[in-house]
Length: 414
Image (cartoon, rainbow, N blue to C red; front, side):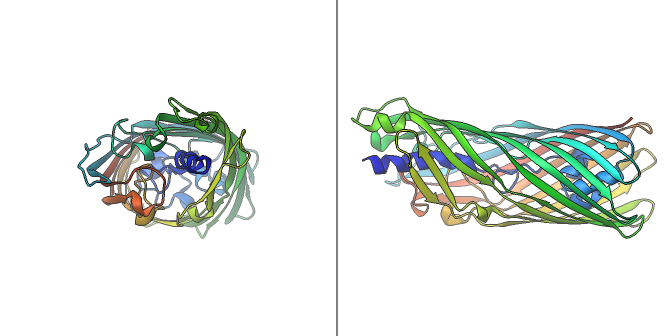
């Protein structure tokens, strides 16, 4: 009985890699309203303001003097589970509005020390999501509420090695917190909850090469951050002797956020038009296992995950309308980290297409504003929990996901 119950803990623990509809896995790409207007095409090479340093810290060398960038993105997802059926092929209730809206803030400040050296600090929310099902839905054993929040503070340094080459590095100081609930009907548990948090450190590296005033390329790397979350698990009901000891205890869970490699290009065609492109590889396959440890039972369980590395491709263009207004647009393809046979209710992930547009307004020589809008359409996702091997009642469903993103930021030069 104890071994079966540890599988319940592992099922609970999948929240630590729960997905949202706006980017593969649970990564939040929305870190710059300016870059969002181009669907993040050329984000590694653009360096149009300080927010681009999240994508490539070497771009700080293009931010002259002292600059402050403050922004945020309102994420309005829509995710629905339809044609829900249980193990007996009985039709369950469809579930609407699974993924909840949220705001992802970002900020950066940079300072030019001299002609070659630049420093800065970034504040970002790189991972996060909120999903919530009805407690009575057919897949409640696999997940009801899922919430992940994170915050990263990144001190940065960039150096202009030559007139053409810039290098940069940053230290990711990252906090992450997770909470989830689900039922465990096979063991008489109406509602079980797990929550935990952690603070750990990673790094980022970047390089930018400017062929001339019109063309530049960038390459950037973000390291893994190996988290060890500490928290507790509790159950609202446990009528079977011995179960309560397992389901009410302090626990630890190990989670490694993925490393990322990005490459981008930016080219100014003429006084009006600029074009850009981006490629990013996210190494989700580095998440090999989910290990959960209990205080009462030193090793609870280890479960193999089947996530894959993902690719992100984007192209974009910008048009300078006049001396104050610039129009941006972009198109991107974002690959899912989850294969069909390993999709779960907490991870109804699928490939998606990004359609973006945006405006840049230069109020004066010191102050500029960026506004962006993105519509993301995800492919339909089929779920069959019998394929995943997870504990809990069998359930099938069809997911329809889409997201709207509204980004806004200001950049001020002191």
